Image 1 (cartoon, one colour):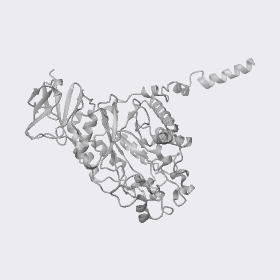
Image 2: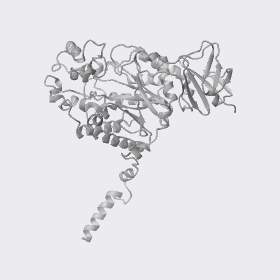
Image 3: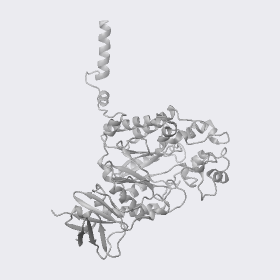
Image 4: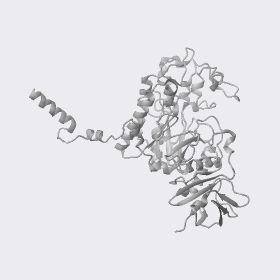
Length: 501
């Protein structure tokens, strides 16, 4: 027994410390894993400065749904979905997605969503072009289109057999974009929407989704109202971990579809997997010696954990923790025909409003299925970048002031309200003891009212990009500024308020 005990002791020592009696590298790493999946641990990971100071990110929607380019990126869901479901057709549309598909491509048992993949070639796709464009736009981070609800992976995946490296374009799109962006010094990550894939497709004998040969894309047959199972969440977890391991992303975007399992069926499989993925990602960042960011939507996590993404809804007031809203450049997430782009002044109003409230803007672009980007979206990013060159001082690295301002800028939610804003609206940011005031309409009178700015008690007010002093008077807590006869800049104007030394 003594010999057996000694033998076991030696084995344990060797396993823990290695043959030389020193602690092994693997055991050292295990002792350096500070994050686990509970709230206190996840919430202890703070938002890094590169993200909270950067303010602007870009991502894109790109997959086989860009080929039919009909209405929106939910095309692969809606062509199979129950015909009486109200989400498949809007009031102004004359056809359902399925009607359009059958008229254009044929019955769904002969031509299904899978058949768009060979047509999705990205023959003109140039990652270097996008990296150069996004650098010129002034963005600090980028998320490559890794996988959408459709389940087609845009990288060389061992977890998802149906991927862009093996089919369609036959290239690792995520890898190409990651390499090109990092060459330009842009923080780079991945955009993921796979949390809804388990329930995305409808299965009928008259659809190609019924054919088990296509399970790698559509998933296994399930009833329309079947709840998720643990394997669904484990598959999502493997996908996320593979992306983390392959690309060491600076940023991970997790879409709100991951919430459906709990919201609809009270199943915690995906919620539990989410916390495991986040803890693992944070621990990996320790190994990489880099600071990372993960954003989430809806109720996937709790406030104070990672970065909350509101999609198109601005947060009320000024949250103490950095947050994010994401919008499209032209009203569509994925390419759906030549649609132009939103006016740059509308996008900038949205951007400055978010920054004044301690938020970031994640702006989406929608390339064509050949990989090119239309000139309207390109010009929007270039004009955005030109505006930032002049006004960057009061944006990048700034913090909110005592108040974000007064009046309505706009939220870019689409439709006619992109031009709904108050002409006298004001927003504020601050940095290094300087207050920056932003306004959206050049007053005909030449006098601009800055509400509450009297509390700052400035000694000098100057236009951003110019050191000339402007005349101003105090009116209670307000300041009235006499603007120059000639406008400086355009779209959204900035003033710099400084105190005497």
